[in-house]
Image (tube, rainbow, N blue to C red; front, side, top):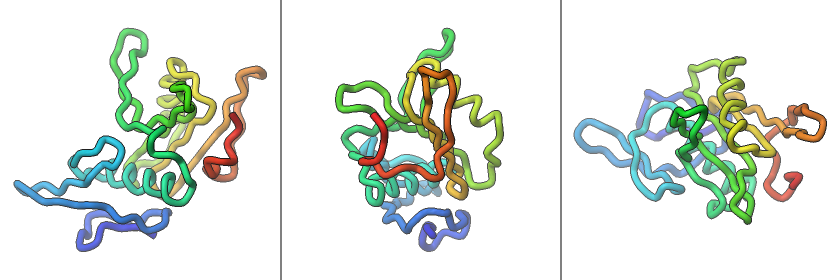
Length: 160
């Protein structure tokens, strides 16, 4: 289980411990985002993001060089941001990850949100997590379907 040491406002997550780099200033706690390479405000959703990214990189061997946070897309004339995108080495999107705070239930609306993003990106995998529950599905574009996986796969086991 992972938690912010010394901070009671975040509940333990269903993820291995992560070494988060925290800083405080002006009454705000910030966390270092290893993908954006800067400190960002530590909200409950950001707490899930940073712990999940640490798990993907440190335990599932996803290359950080192929991952990016807050990727802007244009969806039907509206600017949106994908929480995290994992790219193929050729730069094409491979996986979209959508984060919610631990107290936010993963509902059909959350899946609808990531599916809308995928209408633009056409990623092979879609992942949704609130830090407590993690869902990953593999898109099958040839058969216009998708399959939920038992867990988020190790990077080397992903189908290309």
